Image 1 (cartoon, helix red, strand yellow):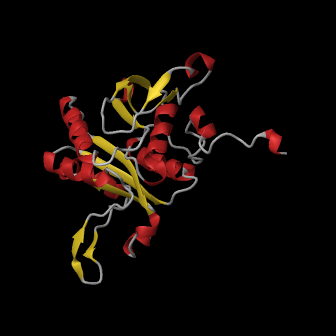
Image 2: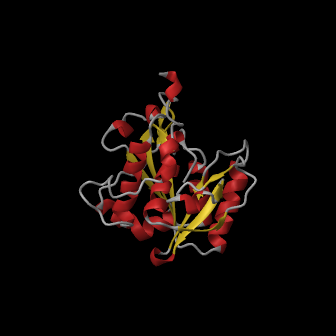
Image 3: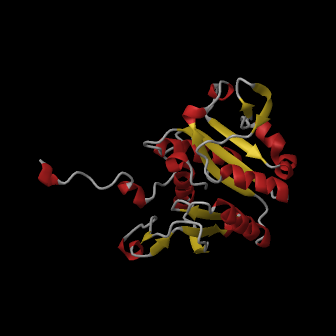
Length: 241
């Protein structure tokens, strides 16, 4: 995921790891993220709750040929580019077939065209477009629109703009230039309770990849991690009442 507005990509990634019961296989060592350590966010009982987790961990599910990198802390200032270089170097050396980046963008900074229809968007690098572009059209997905570089002055020059998307745009453009097959799936949202946004994004991902069998009630099929109970801090102390 990208560390972006509402942490939607990270929350959606939590749902994937938790639901598929993915195995932690390693860490992504980098000095580009704020250091952090905590308990196992996917604990199912006392026996595994004391396992430690850090800011960037790698999970695997060989049966689906799926590897997930979960990021749990923000970037250190001016460290976006070194992180992108390290990550894409790892992607190439690991011979990953394709990369999917889950992200989000500020809802309030949409232009008129982006206000229409679904708040979900996708981007494909040219190399991946050749392979799955037709599938996206079958799904009736909307590609992320480019916006005017100079609104009101010159509306003909269009650029890719992902406000609040963190490292998303840089990772995508670098992947384009390096010939990496990358898809970006993102949702327009605002800061707040972003759990519904995470469900929407992970269902969007599942439409394409079919990680789990789709049902009518699409929220109940995902397993919420135990760590989400404290997403907004602990409850009010009884002493207040």
